[in-house]
Image: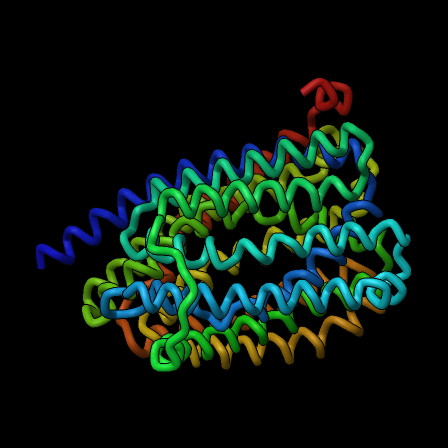
Length: 445
């Protein structure tokens, strides 16, 4: 019992630390995004989105779910576990980079991008070599709930990447600024992870160890692969259908719509390792779920109301009116991410209990729904159709709640209702005030 209390105490401390991290990273991200939105154009955002989504697809094949397996493992993590995971991931990263360099001309031709973007694609791919360092060291830190170290790395990684990206844009490097900044940030982050989560680095291979890790890792990774079909792959399809300009609008809206996820991401980061350590205690897990729902409701719903009521003014006066075509996608995205804030809790607790197969099944449903809905909606509403499809797909995540409810007893609607009502009234109040304020006054804010 004392052990459980110690873990919960660590988790609470971790939540506070991650809260500070999320605020600081959001400030860094928002400020850099304002500069970039004013310095660059929708086509630049769309071009990098195509490149980054493609790299996300390749990144999946640089891992076999070994990082999460190290976090979820019930026993102690050995040096052989770490070296086996590190070796496999490093070999996979090298192989994927070689493939990327070889297919770059085909990629550029398929999306009808300018030839200069070949360097963008190849340069950005180099960050894959840093994945083994982050995954192994990060897994050790998360297992020990040492979130202060994790937060330190992530804040400095984001700050470094953002500073380099904005500097590149100011220097006139255009879309290449994104890749240079991303690689610089990832390299600095990998270096810090290695220093703070140091272990006896080396190459080794144990078939027995690999099989043990992949028992959880492969179902987890299949879930990630299925996620490609309702994530990056469908967005690459969107880029092909509507062009880089419209994809840039969609990506801009998506970057702003993550606001309601700010605090839920913190909760999710904590409850996965905490839940994995307490997975046999259903009573404690039930309390963790209920408290997580309350915290998410207190933070997510007001942010949703604020975003919906002020989105037009924020885009017009902060990012300039060139981004106003993204407004409908932003409204839909805000609602979608609010739904995801809750389904994220359910998915992380299912994973903590080793139910990766349930997530795999849900991912399969999401993938099928996405490809049934996205093509006709994109044809009808351009990039806004993708936002609409995403919202419908996210709503189907209610099955995760039903599945978790079968294993753990907890209350949800009573925990959400008062905060939902308060958010509705607050949103209407803010919208009413903005509607009566003269345009000239708003432009001075």
